Length: 303
Length: 329
Image 1 (tube, rainbow over the protein chains, first blue to last red):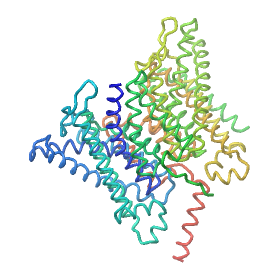
Image 2 (cartoon, rainbow over the protein chains, first blue to last red):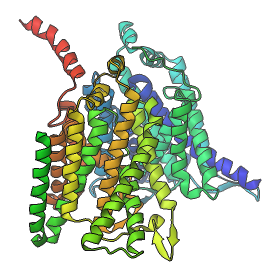
Image 3 (cartoon, one colour):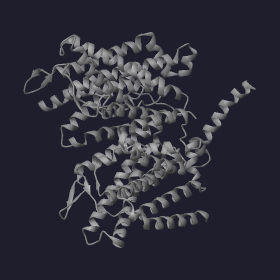
Image 4 (cartoon, chains in turn yellow, red):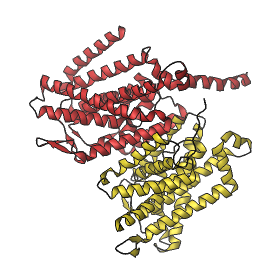
């Protein structure tokens, strides 16, 4: 019983990070109808930016305090927002009217570029690095029933807060309404006077900032970062987005939690060596039996 | 008929050349062999990605299945009284490769069927997922027969050396010949029709479902054989040789050469095998160059260096250009 509870908490905190990354996938899919393969690598850059930012911030405020942590988050999220917008501008914008496959291949190219550029000794270097403890890992609750760390609470709290902010932005603000309009019907939205390019850039910036926040949270929980760390969380978050119904924001959050919980439970059983395979098996099953995902709407193909 | 002579001549050339490669430096021979494996993998992936237009990111999975199946058969045979050299070695290799091809083809069938409902990027992700599942399964399989290790899980699997230059390049010639003839046959036009316009193909009576599955099965069959040859050449296989990064490497060859152009893909496979060797000193920049190449190629010339545009895209481009020329006139 205690083990189930413990795994559930671990799963929720891992799932919260997947949910943050999945939100970026789903938002970008919503406006551009393509899978941004490089999203997991923006997540990696976010973690590294957090690493560098914390070295820099430690000169102003002691690491481990709340202001320092907030500063680290803001710096990394801003840099990644700019990175995401730049990627969109340089790589995806010239291809906007091209077949989807062309954009997908470009996205794979961008992903490889970030991974291998990061491995250059002059950039991040290929070796794993220890991530500074910007969030303390002291236990809050420690009993036979359950161990709960500050990191886990912060991960879940920050993720939920960011999701809530995103929900407000998307549902209540003018730019959010424009985003929904673009994802609903791009042509009609542009006829209504919405600047499509601006909205797409904004979506990339927001999605990338969320990925950066996810990167820092992930690195705080598993404090070792390297340039290839984004591949697996990126793919799993994508599965989460598909599971929830791609293009659907609450769906992505739900999918993230489900994937996180399933993965930690599988890792706790005799099937632990299959944990990466299970996630893909879920993806294949969902695409075969309910391709629109748990909360997604069915798209009708018109000829 | 003409293409049959081409096949015979090409095989004869391979046999003549193979007499001479024995004197070649071991390093050069290895590069030559890798070129052979990559041509088999890239031309077979080209059938799925290039000719049929189904974007697969899981070719290394089929290759891995082939490599392991072939290795299991050959290890069993060589520890049960069959020799590993001379004529006996060739027999063992052939049996192993045929089994490898069929097992991989079966996997291709398993991947092909569920993915029929998926298009474009979804298909790419699902095939990538299959690739990873295959890798994880191989990583967890480990058994012994009569005290001999098979598969070996994450430790890897030591395989007898059976692959020779003559066999590799004879198979290269056969694979290229089969795929070219298949595509240029009346029957093979079905693959191109599925790529160019699925709805129109269906309307013309092409069973698009069957053609997609066939592309996967045939592509996987040859990838399995390629994997078998690869395993029996390097003599040691482990699951990490067949990650989706290997799949991406093969995809890059197909895209660079031009989707749907066999000569282009062969040239790309040769260039992309030699290039990293020539650029040893700046090896860390290799993948950066690859990735930039992909991005720039997609922006400047999405059909690849030697590829041809599909009929539909050409028509669309012409339609787009027409008003522009009318305005300038």
